[in-house]
Amino acid sequence: MTPQPGARQVTLPLHLGGVANLDDEGNIEVDRTRIRTVGVANLAEVVNYRIIAIADSISHYVRFHNGGELYYVYNTRGQLVELTARHVRISVDAEAAYLFRAL
Image (cartoon, rainbow, N blue to C red; front, side, top):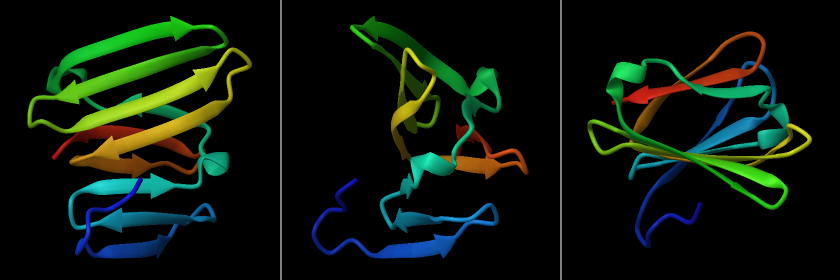
């Protein structure tokens, strides 16, 4: 995640360890080694969900009704290799499950 010039960025500690970086454009970046699972909290908020399998990875793109976006990629071994979220809310439970929903 690269914030636009002039965008403010805040780094917050996570209760499970690690940090989350948030900018004033609604972008979130977290240490993916601490994430166990990724999901959508409320499917009724989703307007588009695409899953694409390419080579050794499976990518997921989710667009929410308010324009928020979630993009994540797992490899075929089940390891999260990329996670990008924009203009979404996020909740994290004690087992490091990250659930995303529209703002």
